[in-house]
Every structure is written in C-alpha cells, then in structure tokens.
Amino acid sequence: MYPAAFEYVAVGSFAEASEQLARAAGEGKLLSGGCSLIPLMKLRLAEPRLLIDLNRVPGAAGIIAQAGEIRIGALAREADVEASALLAASWPILVDTSAVIADPLVRNMGTIGGNIAHADPANDHPATMLALGARFVLSGAAGTREVAAADFFQDLFGTALGEDEVLTEIRIAAPGPGTGSAYVKYERQVGDFAVAAVAAVVVVADSRIRSARLALTNAGPVPLRAEAAEAALVGVRVDDGAALDEAAALAGDGIQPWADLRGGSAYKVDLARGLAGRAVQCAVQRALAYGAVAGAAPGGRR
Amino acid sequence: MTATPAMTATPAREHRITVTVNGQAHEAVVESRLLLVHLLREQLGLTGTHVGCDTTSCGACTVTVDARPIKSCTMFAVQADGREITTIEGLADPDGTLHPLQQAFWDEHGLQCGYCTPGMVMAALPLLDLDEPPTDAQIRTQISGNLCRCTGYANIVRAIASATQRAHAERAPDG
Image 1 (cartoon, rainbow over the protein chains, first blue to last red):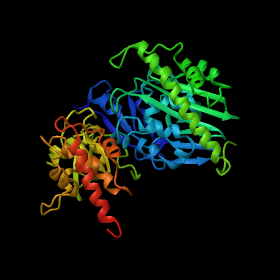
Image 2 (tube, rainbow over the protein chains, first blue to last red):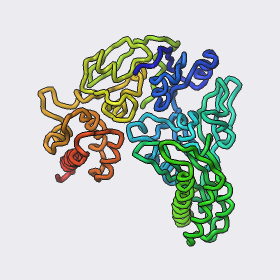
Image 3 (cartoon, rainbow over the protein chains, first blue to last red):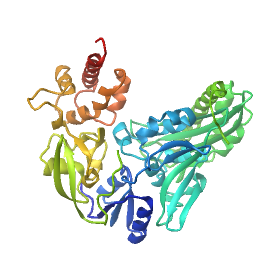
Image 4 (cartoon, rainbow over the protein chains, first blue to last red):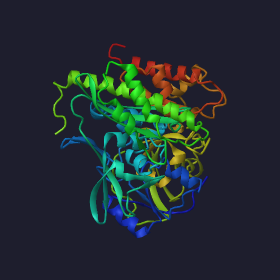
C-alpha cells in the first residue's frame, strides 16, 4: 500500500515545525512515531500535502525531574518511558501505560506526544494524563502556552491544538507522600486497543484514601473522569478491599461505551467497573510502598 | 535515535538520502512516500525483509534502525537518512557462518515456512545484550509484535532462549 504523494520536510526545531504548519494552511501533518499516521496515509484515510518530521528536533525526547515536576519531551519513545527509572519511582502509571501500547517494535517508534496529540479515544495516554492532572506545553507562532489535559481533549480526535501549534512537552507535578498510581487495561489480543482501561491516582494518609482521580480509556469520544467513583473512594480504608472495589465500580456509572467488535456496551461497562477496582488496589499498594520509603526519598511536591 | 541536523531544509517530493545498510553506505533518491521496506527490497535488492500484513501487525518487515528493531512498513525511507540499518542479510558472517540466533533457529527447528523468521530474528536481537538471559515471558513479550502461523511459537521461544543463554555464558567472566 502506498500513500498518496506528499512533500516532506525534516525540521530542526519546534519553531520551524510551527512555521511549516502555518505555511501548509491546514494541509500539513506532523510526523513523530508515525504509528497511527502512516497506516492512515497508506489506507488514504489521510492525505496530507506536507509531512513535517519532528524526529530530528534535538533535545525533544528527555524525561527529567525539574522544578518540582516530571517533564517528558513529546518525542520520548514509548520504549523509553517504559524503561525510565525516574518514572518507575515517581509515576509508575506512565510505565504501566506505555508497556501496554501495541508491541515492543511499535514502542521503539511510537512517541508519548504522538499518542496524546492524535487524541484517539482508544489511545492509552489520554486517560492517564487526565488522572495525573498533566499539563501540555503547546508552542506556536503566538508563543508558548500550557493547557491542562482536561481542556486538551475536546472531541473525537479533536484537541486544543491551534492550526500552527505543536505539543512539545508534558508536565506533571512530582508525586507527594502517600501517592500511588496504576493503569490497568484489558485487551482482546496483544497490541490491540483497549476493550476498557482505567487510570487511577490515589493519595493515602492514615490508612485511608485521602483523594483519588480515575479516568477511563475508550468509554466515550474523549477520555472520561470517573467523578462518582473518586468521591466514593475518599475515606475508604485501604485494607478494605471489598469497599475499595465497591467504590471504584462507580466508574461504570453514566458511561456509554459504543458497541463494536471488541464487545457490547454493557460488557464494556462491567469491565470498566472491575478494572477500576484493580487499578485502585494496585495504586493503593504502590502508595503504601511509597510511604515506606518516603523518608528516604528526596524532594516531593513543592 | 540520535538527533542530527535537518537533512532537508525545504519541503520536497524527492530526496537524496544516504543510509548505511549492513555496514555499507548507500545513496538513493527516494520519493517521500517510499516506505523503508520498499527501499530495502526493491532499490537495494535485500528481499530477506518480508512484507506480510503491511499494517504494522505482523512484524515480518522488522529491521533495526540505530540498533532498535522497528517495523519497516511503517517508516518512510527518507526518515532513515543518515541512520544505520541492519537487515537479516547483515547477520551471518561473509563466509556463511550463521549468526548465533540464526543457528539456534536452525538447531531448535524454530521455523517451518520461514516467512516470519527474518522478523523474529531481528526482533529478538536486543535480548542478546541483556545482563541476564531473558525468561520465557520476556522472550514472548519481545516477539509479541511478530506473528507466526506455522509453529505455535514454542520452538521459536526455545531457539531464542538457547541463543541468549549461550551468549550470556560466553560473556560470563569465568564461563
């Protein structure tokens, strides 16, 4: 399968990418890992006139702790997120998420920024970003701005990105004491999109959940927060597994996932309920482990 | 991948690129839309890299780019400008001595029709460099983007386990 003919340019900076986007006037597409875009082009579902390759932008793939935040360059490969010791120790939910995207070969190409900016509701990072309260750095001709994940995902494949804007970095507050996080996905076969998946971030204090943020993949046109479950989890004892499961199961309330080859709507709702419990319990275990080492860990939230 | 300066300053439909394939530098003129797998097979004549599904699912087209295995049906040839590529043809010694992974596939009967084999071998390469020999679960994860319709995978896993254990034993200081 061959894509329709197009012009290609490899840019050396995000500013240059933004200029090329503006010049292409809506007919340009950014290329990062290409894992979604290139198949779409081969099927001729996408026929951009200009492809702007970001892969040679220097310094765009870092994963660092800075200014009380974890900062991840948009061009960081899923394989590097998966292998990051910094993320395993701070936000293991990101390691969970990257590790269940497609397969190891695809993860050597795929980027975290591409997974987010493509805004496929079946992609895994969007729900994780929502649960983390991540902020995205968008850069365009008018300058640079930060947009919260909650404001970024606007509709099916629709984002807050302006026509000449590029997602350059993901910023997440460093976790405070007693924080735990996990992403749990159910897929029909290795590498498939989620039938359902749940991202959970909890803060534990005095053996109870002090706060929780849950978000769902593939449960609607955009990633969804599970606010009823979040509210119900507050105050639940962390050693009461049945109560954690019961509160987390409210994640299935009010969602209407579409029926498709991966399953019917009611089945997906049931899955979301069950996976929410597993994600919360895993996050709680990690929060308790965090507590055990918190005294030794430097830094924390500013 | 290491960042290098932009090779193409202005948008174009055709590009003159230089790629190093199996240690040998090649210059080529490529259309933007030419996929890496077609550059390898049709312009460079390296037909050991196969096209199976053409949809990033089967892994028959796996090659390494700067030592990382990727699916060459989902990368444009122009993206490979300045990169180091290894295909299945680059593994055996010039005298025909098979690479340890290839030999292990032979010894353990890790192939039947052979169509997926180049991709399986290329995907497994990074496992040779681990500090410890990989577990069967690690092997199965590493080849989870490669489909085989003949073997049922058992002998493929056995072959990779055998090669990685041998590589580890040969590296061990007292081994």
